Length: 403
Image 1: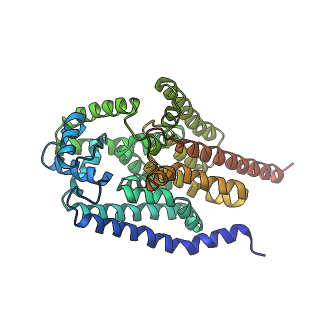
Image 2: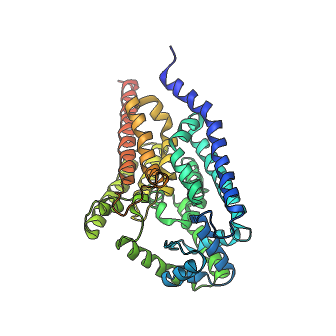
Image 3: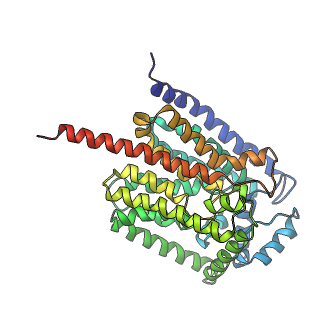
């Protein structure tokens, strides 16, 4: 009789090529969709269009205006008048990326960006998960489709964070390079940074600091030093917009968004959000003090990073699947069928709920945000399974110790 674990692994391995073909076919279809539509056209506006627009503004010397809510709203409405407003709050370092992408037409830039960053993310995911890559790929499918259909940068940040996870479990300072490059979305690197600090990886921290300083300097040189004050003002404006309910909460995955969508006052929701984030980060510190393996601590740090920012979206959920990839060996040995199923469903909830609502055209201001519950459940389940693994290892050591 075939071992169920082996059977699941084989299913994942056989399904992986088909899933990859579907992902890249979707990218090709999206490219075709935008090929004849111009910069903004009847094919619809996705997040990548905003990347292209801001990249063009940066090349023309008006990048700072993208952080001005009023000015950027006027620019958007002059191009497409669909009533939607997309704010720009990315750090200037990401502005360098979109400026390069805007050198080519939208359809080509989209194709290059999505196919290239998807390949990088999947390569890192494969290195982390090994034989379990197919299973992790299936678990991550809603997240992967969300990024492709929105043209977001989740594959890029996922690949960078994945390199950190891959290298931090080994010796050396090179993990500091991807940690520093997470300045493109620094709120997703808080848990990873805490891990570097509590594990006393001073070389990693030093390399990360140099990487941040160099990339920030390059941004100032190419876009003007005023871009950084403009960015800080844009962050404040985005925070106010979020507190006023300006964003689509059902697409968001933070505890703050979830509690706000259920009617809690903003101050209370934010307080509880901070509490959950502190618990998640505290778990990273606690297991480091207990001497858990680097692989397990890194998996927890990845999930904790996804719970830190109140401004979290479904396209930021790459971190969850990096954690599942890191956890795969322990899951195969010690997780029950129910726990494995719950982990996959939790990942789908965190990264696929917004996609389902959008595709089903069920959008409504009153829709709840429930993605955060999926992320929390992933954290709880991984902690439970890792705790079991640690207890098993400690028991084995005690039994083999000399009397």
